[in-house]
Length: 270
Image 1 (cartoon, rainbow, N blue to C red):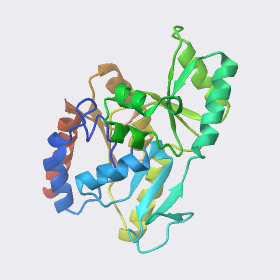
Image 2: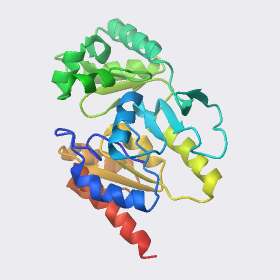
Image 3: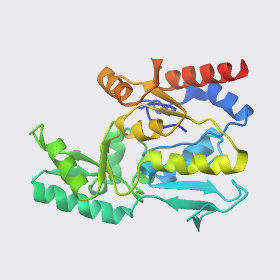
Image 4: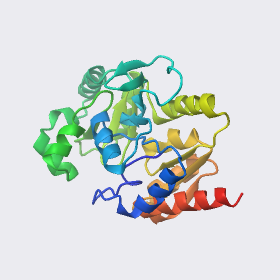
């Protein structure tokens, strides 16, 4: 199970070229590659098509698990059918999350810039995306990216505490803070792991992530891998929170490839 930006895909160039050879090895070995990202369902569907993946995926920081119909020889508990997928929702609807975010921010006197308030052009410019990709990024269903627009450095942590008191969860995803309700990547990962165990028996799960919103995912897997990022403090903070985590030497997709190749080579040696 892998995060996307900063791991499988370069956060700046959007290239996954450095990870392609390792990804091909996973496909050849028939190892499921589960994208687990803050990205929307629409963004992940396009990326899966580009990468040639057909495995289940987890959108918007654990907001929902999408399994193609027929991925498992049984119905997923609590799933609903949607667009050729069985969907298990862990997060509350986006409109409810956004409403609480704005209400709490106003009450706390913390100005925020939310993704929903940004135009498609704003998102494209801010994230370095094409207009088509920015439209997909704005199709939020469970999670709202936002930035605190205050000069007071304590405003961000104050808002996060208030959001948690209101029943929401906030985490940093790199470019933005993200807020959800009732969801995190770890919950969805544990659910999916149980599906694979029901189908195959014992499985060994690997997780790869690079940011604070990946901590729950990495805690939920057998082999947690922190893909080194450009900010050494973020990498160190994650390593302190995740017991037994491997930290890659290389950054981004090259680090992702480094870890995957080492795991595959180690598995073949047994």
